[in-house]
Image 1 (spheres, rainbow, N blue to C red):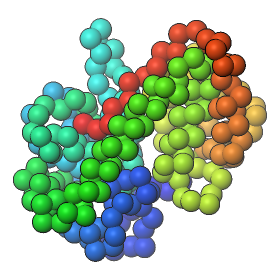
Image 2 (cartoon, rainbow, N blue to C red):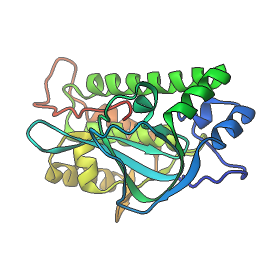
Image 3 (cartoon, rainbow, N blue to C red):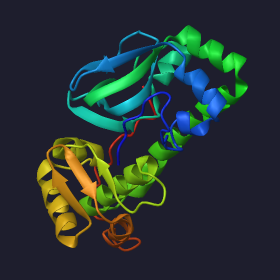
Length: 252
């Protein structure tokens, strides 16, 4: 799954992201907001608790959203890719950031100030509706993840979140996808120890559902992965032990 997008090209924008929710005319308006920025791998683009109020419209690359729990541990809240808007909450209400956004590889984006974003949604109601729908979709995903993970073992949780990300960001009609995630990032996203993720990934590899590489997991068969996600869950009414359900944040 390639997620490199450039303005003016015949790009594919995932339907779940803001750019995929608007028509071509409104997409051009969004792509004209703010100014272009490039973040190298590992650079922090938005910092937790900061009072900045800009948003980032991702055009290429992948970012991870993290936050610190009360005990000091870092939790991976979400993964966002090209077509997504990140930082939209602070870009709307001006409140402190609830998470840190870090580039996972080289990232291209539009840096959009709060004032410009609000004026855009005021002048173009369809964009405002698309932005609201995008935020609602993230909230639904966060709620669904908590419910979906309840009583599910690590293999089931991993299979489900990999399938979800592949469906959201993959091209329609394709039964495979690539996700730029390291094993430690998958562990925090799934809510499990790295050793458990190693075992679950080995099971997925042996089944033929995925292959793994450095900071990358390639899904070879989405349908097969979906079957594993269902089959790995315990029978109804049978607990699988502590689920360690991760917190999935809608945005930052």
